[in-house]
Length: 431
Image (tube, rainbow, N blue to C red; front, top):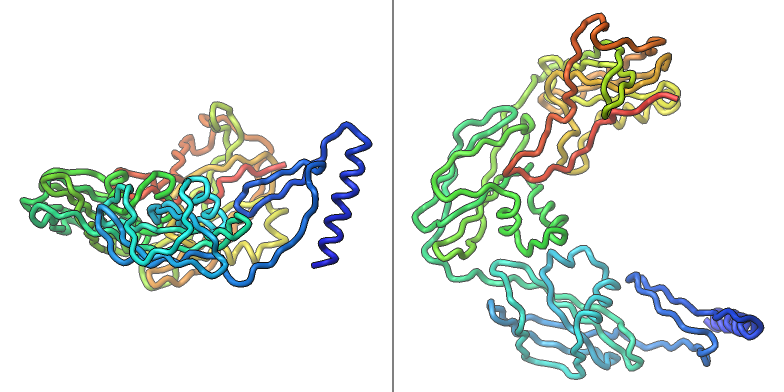
């Protein structure tokens, strides 16, 4: 520490002497982990020293009682804590923030400084939403006025008294491989309700991810914002679903006075596709033509992928041969994988014809593989080809039929969680 201090002081002395010989003004800049920066003009710095304070500098909080009007809490400082600042946020807003960021946030948003402990104190002045998670954050301040340790405590607000017992009954009308239809029947205590679907386990994770962006304090607000709303008995069909996949449907109801009830959850599984045999994908090379790419006619190679009747899902990709060959085994291993999180566009299920912009006289490799109903991957079909020397006009193509691109077969629809789309690489390939 002493050597480090001497090095810092020597650097400052050199900079200070340099400043006296020029008209430039040298500054000492300190960058904090929170992203904030503090600066000092070196000519105004008298000296620097390092101090060590033993123990934590924190204000520990305990929540004693929670209502929609106030929160009763206890706050006790550690021995080295001179004062502290305190604030309260919806947990969804700050869940991903580091302690450094939270310390800076509390400091900038809270003007009150507390120098005493509280065995029982009421926090008021906050308009709490019912059935919502909140977090009280304190930041301890030492005798030098420096922000130190952060403490957090979470609590959930109670529900607001409801008029009656608003509930929505759910009935399965039709469950297919790529779509499902549900019937929703609200009881007499429901004034309106919203429904939202997503892959099982995705709704809460997406709430945690997107709530700060959209300003949602609780899941009910997300269901209302992204879902489909009804006021009476209704049926709704979700399309572009995936076969053999578990889905969840969240239902948010409101009573006659517009008070939000606890949301309901319903789970279902779409019909499976494929069989228990070997799953395979046939690759068929189509026409090489001039196709419209954003208003510009460019050479495009059409390819058709056809899974067999044992395939429940499949994946594919196209690569330049010179880029594929050195890492072929890694690419193949990556092809036969599951998505790291619920994600649309990772798998395909039905025959697809699409095109790729590829330069003439270019050697490429297409790979495709499928898994069966048991999740067992079949053989990887590797198809190597070289594009012709010239692309012909579409109406001069041998087949004279150019299939419509249908890569985006998992389009978003109303009442469905916005998908985390991973596009299979429709690549611009060529030199």
